[in-house]
Each structure stands twice: as C-alpha cells, then as structure tokens.
Image 1 (cartoon, chains in turn brown, orange):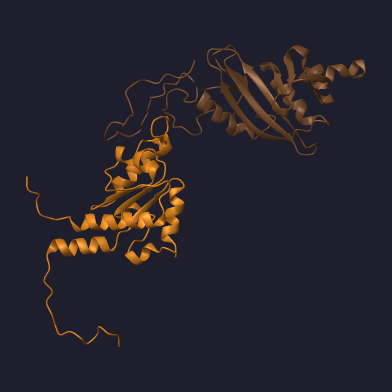
Image 2: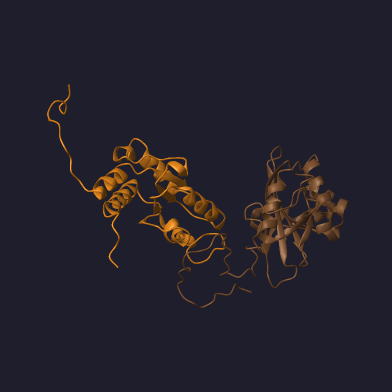
Length: 193
Length: 162
C-alpha cells in the first residue's frame, strides 16, 4: 500500500504503470507560471515538461536559477513538424544541470502557421546558432533574436527544407547544371501526411 | 661521379611534340585538392609517406593557379558547387578533373533525395576520371591517377578527324 502525504500527490505522475517522482522545483515552476501553462510527463525515462509559448522565457529563467534545478548547460534546440495536426510544430529544448547531475526536456507547441516563439538567447546565449538553424530548416521565427538569418543554406534558398510540405524533388542549384539529374523513376514521391 | 655522366656523346633527341608535351604533363600532375568530406582523409593519407603520391610526380597544390588537375573528394553541396565551379574556372589550361568517392560520382547516399547535395560533380564540371568507393582506398586513388596518366598520354595537338 502506497501511503503518500496529500501535498506530495501533486508530484507523482503515473506513466506506463510506474509512479514517477517529480522534483519539487517543478511544483514551484507550476506555481510561478500557472498550472495551465505546464504539463509534466516522463517519456523515455526523462523528465519532460510542455510549456506554453508565452511562458517559455519565464520558465527557462526559473530552471536556470532555481537552487534545486540549476540547469546551467544548454544542450540542444530543435523542432518537429507534425504536419496535419494542430499544433503543427513542436520546439524541443534539452537542458543539463551539471551541479545537480540531471536532465530535462522542454517542449513548446507552436500552434499556428506563423510559427513564431520568443527567443531564449537572452537566457542561454549558446542557443543563438541553434535558433538560426531551426529558422533555416524549419522556418520557425524566434522573436527578439539578435541575428535571425540563415546559417547553413544560402540566402537565396526559398522555403524551409525540413518542413514536411517541402517538395521532395525540389532542387535549388546555384550554378547551371550540365545535365539533368539521374532518377530511379519518374513517379513523384509525396511526403507522408 | 654517378652512372650517367660521361657515358654519352653530344646527341640529338628526336620525338614528337605530342609525346614530349604529354610526357611533361603526365609526369607532374599537380592536383588542386578539394577535400569536402571523409574522402579527404583518404586523400591526405595517399599524399602522406605511406603511399607517397609525390613519387609519381603528384604534388598537391593549395592554389588553382598552379594546378592542372582538380581532385574533388567528398560530398558536393549546392552551396559549395558555386565555389568549385569558380576554382575550376581559375585553373589554367590544360586541366583535368578527378571525382573521388561515391558522393562526388553520383551523390552517394544522397543520390535520390536531398535538397542540399549536387548529384555528382559531373553536373557542374566535366569529369575525366571517376574513382568508386565510399571512401576509396588509397590504392584506388593511386589507380585513378594512373588512369588519368593514360588519358593524358592519348592527348594530341592535331585536329581530330571529323
């Protein structure tokens, strides 16, 4: 029989029949930004929170500075295109706390096709090029970024190639090609919807 | 005193212009190295002491103006294709192109899909020798240069019969 004090119930999440212990700083974060703006989950044995777009800067500031969290190391920022679903895009941020030896995954749903979210370079300067890469390949605009332009592709490139609706056969060469591209077959391959 | 001095009298050597031009060209191929991916590691290895391309007169040059062969080794992206073309245009005639590795030959693993890779260097430049492999062994690269030498041997100044 599991005996849990009432105030501790908030911190437990049932995932795949396992009861996961959620750290106390997540509770404090919930108090800070509001319950509606935060969902907690435990997929792949890693603490994952989904934060609403408007509260992401506040949440990251808290996670970096809170004495129990201390997520001082920015690891990764990327995006996923769930085409045909609402919200369409999801930006995923990974953080590591070196003093506390813990990791967290943060997801932000971007529900409209304007695909915009606030920048996090003010909190983690290392996110600068990650956001530019994300903008380059997924077309997600980071409002307030100091230098939001393409980082890997050339400036004349049209469209965002890792979006699922980018035509799979589309080529944008910068020099004139001497001969047509050799193709296995002429049938068009449509991206999965 | 070595073995060659004092052996021959004053002499006249007769050969064709083609032969002597081709002999000079094939004996000192100076490639402009264009390492773009992992093939470049094999290329460096072939240039280094174990395989020693220098013994065949092949000596890598960092400048297109001193080179007569462009060795493209690696994945050619659409962004880089413009630079390759420009460097090729800066090389003096006569010039040859070696395409090293699957990516440079056909696009390699990006041969069908991929917005970013040129499906073969021959879409941008006229290629003389293709070296298959992913990446090719240094022996394969050596063989590629030997094939290029065979090609150069067949060149002629004469007008080709129509």
